[in-house]
Length: 220
Image (cartoon, rainbow, N blue to C red; front, side, top):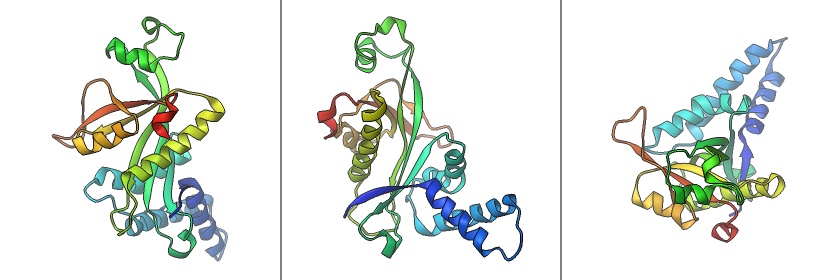
């Protein structure tokens, strides 16, 4: 199995093009977009499920496309490059975006690890990085893809960008569960800051975590 990521905008554009080609008479761009988005939502409902993670399901179905087309995030459908054009199976979702983190209230030791070499932690209150906003496997399929496989692919994509434009930090907010946190720690992520309460679900909290991309051996 060879995992690869297909841009959500690329997938959506193919749907929009299909709608245009199926139109029997002149159709306004607004109508085409409306039909294409309805088809997209239907495809999402049929092709992928994140199990108990309803927030991620709702995000992909209702929000991801708007975030993608407005350039606020990049969303990727993970597929098996070897047989996707035969099976059409979606194996998972990765969402990446830019993030500026407020480090004014975290401990000095954590600040030192996040700030670029040669910069004083006393003069910096915010640092930029890449956020892994969504990461989930398709629970509808009985396949061997694991969360670690998706995380490895996400980090490979991020490192590719870093090799071109530079950068240091990757961030994510992990569900505060020992098994999940342990997975991220195995890739070099470390905890920082205070737990974050989910705004919509009582009792669900997240642990902010960060990875220093300059520690390349932690990723490889």
